[in-house]
Length: 451
Image (cartoon, rainbow, N blue to C red):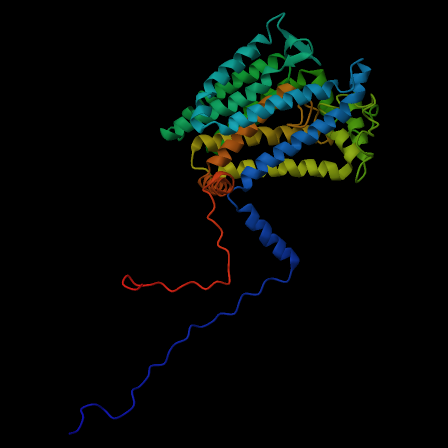
C-alpha cells in the first residue's frame, strides 16, 4: 500500500536571526562629550530648583563675607564696633531665610491671596514716609522710616514685591477671562497703580528704585504679550518723564556725566566715587589682593559696603571673584526664565518673570554703575550688598521662585521619588531577615502520605 505521504524530507524554514547593530561609538572629542553631559544636566527636572536654591544661598553667604570685610573701616570711623554692620546684615539674612522657607512652602493660591494685602501695606508705608516726624532722609532721599535705634526700613523695596505679586494676579485673572486682547484691559489698572507707586517713590527723590519698578512693569507687559505699538508708547512716555527728572536735577546730571570717567577732577563735575570704583577693580588683578586687604575701603571709596561692594569684591578677590558673582547671577536668571517658560499657570509665569526681571535689572544697574558703563543709581546689588530693607523682600521673592520650581509636574515627581527612596532608608518597612548560605543540603519535600 502506497503511503499518501511524500517520501521527501521535510523542508525546514530558514530562521531569521535578528540583526545586531554595532554600538554607537562615543565621540572622541572631550568638548563634545562635555557639551552632551552639560545638556543632559540642564534638561533634568530639578535643575531650576537647585540653581535657584544653591545660587541664591551662595550669593547671600558670599555677600555676608564681603559686607564684613568692606564695612569694618566705615564702622570704626563712626566709633562703632568693627562687626556692627555685619551683625545687622546677619540678622536680616536670618529673618530673610525664614521668609524664604515660608514662601517656598506656601501654595500658589496663598501667594495670590497675599497680593492685595502686600500692595495695600506697601502703599500705606510709602505714604507714611512723607509724613513729617515719621519719614527720614538718608543721603538726600526721603524714603526711610525709623524703627528706633539704628534700625530703619525702606518701604519702596517692598513696593517691588507688591507690584510683582499684584500685577501677576491681575494679569492672570484677565487672561482667564480672555481680556488681555484689548489694550485697555492690559493697561488698566496695572499702569495707573504702577505710576502711583512710582510717584510715591519719586516724592522722596529715589530715582534708582523707580527705574527698577519701571523695569518690572515692562517685564509684566512683555510677558502679557503687549503689542509693539503699545509697548513702545508706554516706554516713550516713561523715557520722557525720566529725561525731565534728570534734566531738572543737578545731582542726576552730574551722575550722568560721570559715565566712563577716569579722573575725578578732569570733568566739570566731581566723579570721585565712580573713579575710585574703577581704581578698586583695576588694582585687584586676576586673584585679588586678598580677603580684607582692600585699600579703597579706607575712606577713598564711599558706600564701599552698599552700592559699591562689587568694587571691593574685585579688589580683594580679583577677576576670579567678580566672574564668580556674575556666573551666580547668570545661573539665577536662567533658572527664573526656565521656571517662567515651562509652566502652564499664568500667575506663575507672570510672577516668576517679574521676580527675574527685578533681580536681573537691579544687578545690571548696580554692576554697570561700578564698571562705569551706567550712571550711579544708588541701588544695592541683590542679596549681596548691605541693607536689610532690600534683603528681606528679595529673599521672599527667591522663595517664590523655589515654590514655583517645585510646582512643575516633572520636578514634583522627581522630588516625590527622592523622598520615597530616602524615606524607606530612614523609617520605612523593616528589612527582611538575611538568609545565610550554609553547607547543609535541604531535605526534599515529602508528599502528604509519605512518612
